Image 1: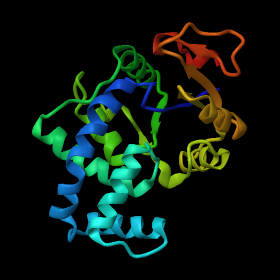
Image 2: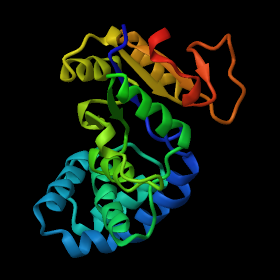
Image 3: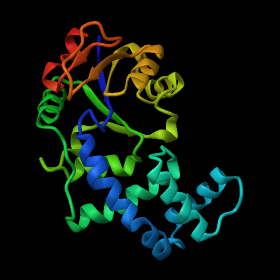
Amino acid sequence: MIRAVLTDIEGTTTSVSFVFEVLFPYARARIADFVREHAAEPEVHEQLESISAEAGRQLSEAEAIEQLIRWIDEDRKITPLKALQGMVWRQGYERGDFTGHVYPDAVRALRAWKAQGLRLHVYSSGSVLAQRLLFGHSDLGDLASLFDGYFDTRIGPKREPASYRAIAEEMSLSPGEILFLSDVEEELDAARAAGMSTTWLVRDAVPDPAAAHPQVADFDAVDPRTV
């Protein structure tokens, strides 16, 4: 029996276009100035040290900024990049420069599942900070209270079964009690290999009954009780 739903964000609860047309350009345009202004602050300094560790040598501030811009342009899922992007987005949300996009069908389903007693968690390549900000400042209101927990790449890569086993352990559930929702087949493959149930969101396509994972067009078509 499913006791918890674990959901991806980009392409699942949230439009890919919001991420690529709003969030990423906003961070790219501001991350250099943000690093220069806040480099001495502990949470930023820690991420700059992590960038140097990724590079295998101590980078100057200018070199670290150059590396961040390169990672953004390559759409890399690097933990210190995601952490610093989250800090930049925090400023944007707090200033009211944008709100987080969440599909109405996702909100309907998440609220219904919460009312049914299911636990709700998020697993995204974006930092936990970025996840909390998006749902806490969504264009449909503050949705952060719907979720029991958040996971990012600090627990492991999204295409590795070990990451999903670690999440289940953190949730004190067996993998078989968790339904994972995503729009990325390789992530679903990893979750299933770890023992989780899976559902594939295909918002811009007609669901294929022969697909490797059950496909649905939106959250309205997901019923954790029948998985």
